[in-house]
Amino acid sequence: MIATVLALLIFALLISVAVSLITTGANIGVQELQGQQAFNIAEGGIERALNEFYKTGTSCNSLVYSSTLGNGSFTTDFTASVPPYPYLYNPSPATTLSNNILAADTTIPVASTAGYAPQGRIRIDSEEIFYGSISGNNFINAQRGVAGTTATGHLNTTPVYQNQCSIRSEGSIASNPLANPTKRVVERAVEGISTYRGSFTKPTGVAPVSQAITGIGFRPKAVIFVWTQQTTPPPNFSANANAGIGFATSAANERAVSVTAMDSSNESDAGRRRSESDAIIFLTNGGNVGANTQLIAQAELTSLDADGFTLNWTTNDPNAYRIHFIALGGDITNALASTFTLNTTIVPPTQSVTGVGFQPDFVMFLWSFNEPVDSNRNNAEIGIGFAQSSTARSAMVFADRNNRADNTSKRWQQRTNAAILLLNPNANPPNQDAIADFVSMDADGFTVNKSDAPAANTPVFFLALKGGRHKVDSFNQPAITGNQTITGVGFKPEELLLASFNLIAQAGIVGNGAISIGSAKLPTSRGSIWFQDRSDLDPSEANMYTSTTDVITLAIGSATVNARADFVSFDNDGFTLNWTTADATARQILYWAIGPNVDATNISQREVYP
Image 1: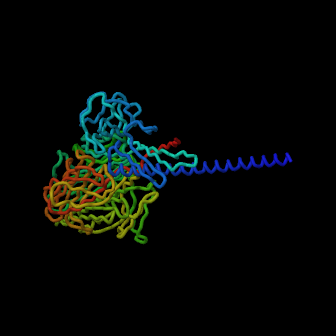
Image 2: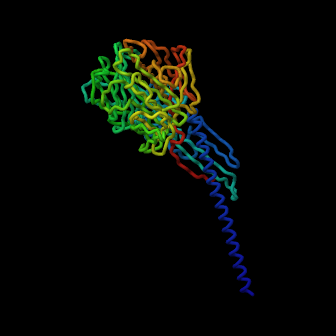
Image 3: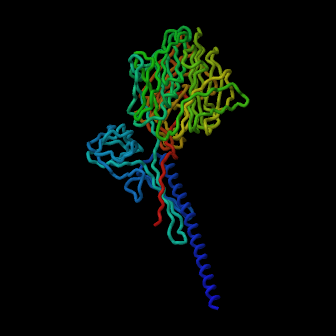
């Protein structure tokens, strides 16, 4: 009997232990599930905050979001003071100014830079400041008054906050069976995109000449160059048309195209050159250039540096020509300047370009015709295209037939439903050689679709970028002066590039246009070029123009500006221009806007159990 009772007690005890283990296991399973749910909610809060932050460009310390999701909730805030949890970058005032600074100062002296990020954002009083690098106890290459704040003077010993826009999001889920609310915390440090727009003058010494461009504030991943052959202080018109476009992502990956046309010639006089080993090319300007086009200056990229880039002028003349550039870094995680061959195959019409090494977010195209690289050729052609997606792309092209006595064989084309437009500059007049639309960004490159294949295989340069946010679209020049606000970008840009063939929107090839290219970073940092070789005058009328005060300059005809715009601001959903000169022609203007990437962040995670 005793043995039977003892056996029953042992059995009951085992059942009790088993039930306890099952209950505990169930509770642990619930906790794990709720922990994952809380983490997902916290990440949702991060994404919401990032989208709003990048869309509005709001000051780093003024965003707080909270929301209820079913039986869960999240609260997300940007750093403004010492938080209850550690941040990737401590935003507390770790140092102070070591001297008074003025609103225009780009060097910020402090008591110590120890512990600060190599480049990033600081806050002094209510002003936010981007700094490009650190030198001793100085933040240098500073951009003042960013994120909608105002540049102002600050006094010695004022606290300096490291304000990297770290974000903390706490997600919580309803209480578990143990009556403890389940919470998870996700923290991210917002990197942002680094952009710089500037200009410099070519050195005048005997080649080879090394030229270092500094003051950019970061190490670029890609640099885009545009130029005319002008030396006098801009803005100004000059006779003849010599202009070009180039880009580079490393010393081994650079491309350039240059064209030239002579003014006051009794027959058309035009030439061209393209290169896969140089980023900048200057050709002879005037004096029967088409028949005897000569290279007078060229520069190859030597390196992309911590504070800029270095060029090597392997051929050089004694003139200080002005060159505009855009440098891109930060969120741009991958960049490649390369070439693909647009082939003659029309069945199938699609053509995939591979070997890029990543899936781009944006592609810029640049072409001349099918001549060998680094060779001078009669007849001119230069074209550029932009592609964000199969529905967001655009292109423009100019071609000039050399040695025509009537000076009427110059042609232009611009479209917003194609990424590549080839004209045949050897035809009289230049006619359509190819049209390629953009299809997709692929895992190792991109795909285009040829509605009109070229007559011969034709090389096309491209700049592929991964990272950042991009918008390719167009708008029309207004008929009156004053501000024009462009919306629908979807985010607040940090860099803008404009391009136009100086005519109203039309898809066909036209006989009298011009090429305008301009860019802007700030109201004090903008510039543009313009050039034209008219097709309706004999002798020829070729002119060029460069400016460091216009974001775009538009003209048709003699050396008179028909319309020009200055840059005002980047806005929550676009940008604003100020047209200081305007006429009644609604010229179509293509644009590419660049902003920070929502996903380009670093993540640290911390679990919290109250």
